[in-house]
Amino acid sequence: MVVPLVVQDLPPPADVSAFETSACAEKMILYTPTRFPEQSVFFDLGIVGTVKVHHLNCGTMVMGMVDHCLLIETADCLVLVDTGFGLNCVRDPARVLGWSRHVTRPRLAERDTAIRQVAALGYDPADVRHILLTHLDYDHAGGLADFPWATVHVREPEFHAASNPTLAERPRYRPQQWAHGPKWAMSSATGGENWFGFQAVRELPGLPAEFLVVPLVGHTRGHAGVAVDTGAGWLLHAGDAFLSDVEIRRNTMAVGVIGRVRGAMGSLPKTYVENVARLAELHRAHGAEMTIFASHDAAAFERLR
Ligand SMILES: [Zn+2]
Image (cartoon, rainbow, N blue to C red; front, side):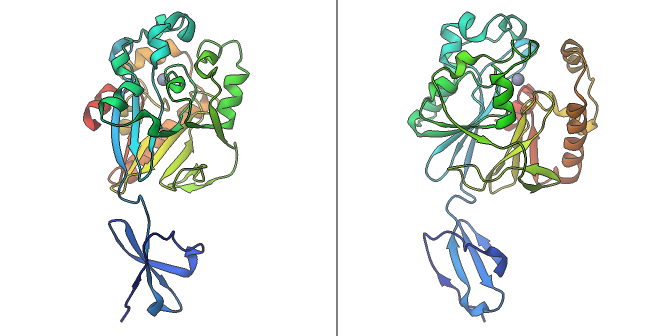
């Protein structure tokens, strides 16, 4: 009979391959050494099963599109996934957003900014210590300047694209939004591990293993999704990898309003189309254990908030 020794406040063993993880309750997991089962030990996993997720709409745009961001409370800090439109966008839209704001037509209000919503939920904005960005488009990076102390995680190809935009890319990136000089933490273009058949970057500096960056190139050169293990299933914020979850439920890209948006966007990159098909397959195979949503899908936001 295995009588485990309970050890609190220790990280999991360095080499977990030598153990069987045979029990998990609340924050604890039982590691059983395969050769010496009597030495089983409970390890405190810290935040596993304890992350709290808030869904925020940080800016409503043309055709009712929302700007779906996540605020995640971990054991020791707050994490934002995307930032929507920030205070500078509200106060000085011509300078911070440029002319393309007339295309997306955001309804700009301070109460919709992430920093105001963080405070309204009773949190201290200073506790937002990490921001994960799906990409650097101005409707996703607009709130960066409101959290200048936070480490900003972005994929290196996305940072490179935003720093060296082509003529066509210039309207989408607004360097004014990161002129304060964020603490960037860039994940490399290659490497990572397999996550449900997708390449994923797990080792994000300062963040626990529950957070993964999943490259989903197409909408922009370095676009990514952010996956979070909530303890009650995976949540995949797919950014702008698709527009409506109708697309991944039916694997079709032209439905009503969505089709008109697609038309306005012009021809879609091959990688974008491929990733929608991959996400549709991910939803088909793992939809029961995973929630996938896109940034601007108002129906998904209403369902999840
Ligand atoms: Zn967007």
